[in-house]
Amino acid sequence: MSSETLFTKIVNREIPADIIYEDDLLLAFKDINPQAPFHALVIPKQVIATANDITAENSDVVGKMYVAAAKIAKQEGFADDGYRLVMNCNEHGGQTVYHIHLHVLGGKPMGWPPYTDKAKKA
Ligand code: 5GP
Image (cartoon, rainbow, N blue to C red; front, top):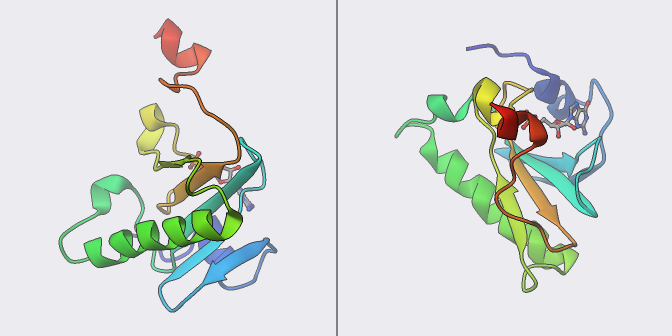
C-alpha cells in the first residue's frame, strides 16, 4: 500500500486545499472541481487505496468518515433537504485518486441513476 498520495500531500500541507474539517483520523476539504453547489471530500489520513481495501481492521475509520460527512451536511445547512455521499472504486467506478474519499455533494436536487454518457454507451 502506498504511503504517499495526492491526498496525503494535502494532509501534510504540501499542497494547498480548502480544509473544512480535521481530527486525528480524518481530513475534509473542498473538491477542486465541484460537481454541486457544495462538494467536499472526506478522507482518512491513513492511506486506504480503494473500497476493496476496506477490512474489518480499518473499517472503524470508514464509519467515522460517514459521521464526519453527516456533521458537515448539518453545518452546511443541507442535511434535512438531502445530499449525496459517493465513494468511487477503481476504473469502472470512476476513481482517479487511489486514496479512499467520500464525496459529499449537496445544495441542489440530484438525479438518479448517475450514469454519464460514457457509461450509457458501454
Ligand atoms: P474520484 O474521481 O477519485 O472519485 O475523485 C477524486 C476527486 O478529487 C475529484 O472530484 C477531483 O476533482 C478531486 N481532486 C483531484 N485533485 C485535487 C486536488 O489537488 N485538490 C482537491 N481539493 N481536489 C482534487
